[in-house]
Image (tube, rainbow, N blue to C red; front, side, top):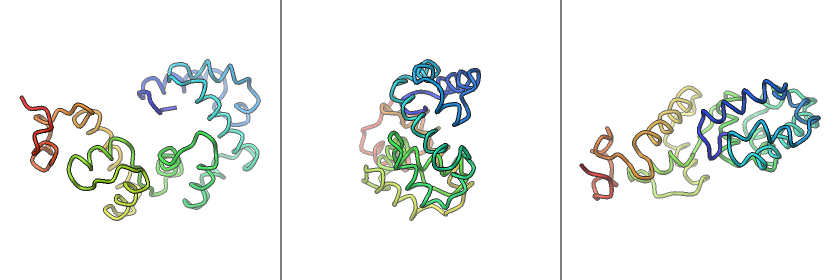
Length: 187
């Protein structure tokens, strides 16, 4: 639900799903697609997201008897493989689910992280799996470290290292090749 939207809109949709009793996978599989779409409207791309959410609910109901925790208890590699088999779940979403919902150490190489690492000159990789491999080599495989790292990258990407960055105010500009090359915004 958080893809291509802000967290505030995702929270609005979550509240709508809760109000309609649709936070349970079994309820999601039984309800009409249109009702799920209505709840997801605040997030944008709601028609696609409704299908994807129902796909995920179907997997949980059909393969795990509705037991979300049963799915999340799987080893990370098995969990990732199963999540990626669901239409609408890509690598970033799968890794985020593993890191935050399953609470297992997993690197998330989202667009913010990729942009920041590239601008700092730490990697030239842009493909998700390549950036993830870079992170796996660079970071300890510790849950709290990976959560904090990802949260800080998202925050820095939203506040400073935007598509049009605020380089002059950035605490990393003395380390940043992008800023050094004069590509960043200067006062």
